[in-house]
Length: 148
Image 1 (tube, helix red, strand yellow):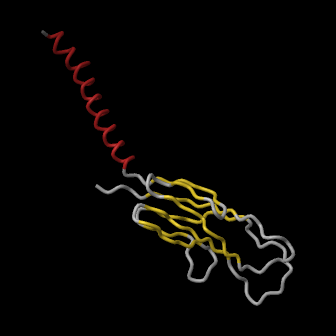
Image 2: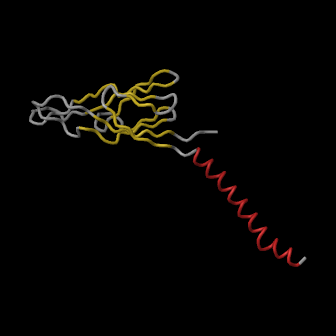
Image 3: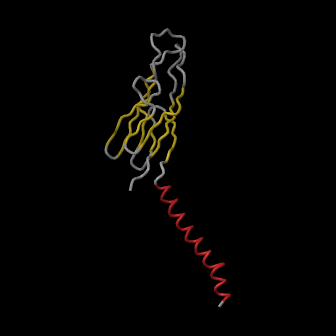
């Protein structure tokens, strides 16, 4: 009998406690992962689109570059802005990202998605006599936490 009690105290109950804690920890971390915002980064050129979720697609429609070209004489610095369309199950929403446009924003949240301008190419305006560059924009898209 003493051997049985000793076996229960030293092996069985500690093992059961570890299994119970491991089970609780796994459920908790799974729930936390489900509610953790997810971020992805995409690089787009005008006309390109990317699926974000099963129902959301982001399309870069056009680039407006009014920056003063290298070698030109200008009365203002200008800015570059990126016009997107977010296609979703309820229709379409237009959004503009810019880090230099007056009253513009480099990050916008629409419903459960946040769009953040990370990088642009070209970063500086081309020379005055150069052809229009191929614009590329890097956007971080963060999908917000799911609510229960």
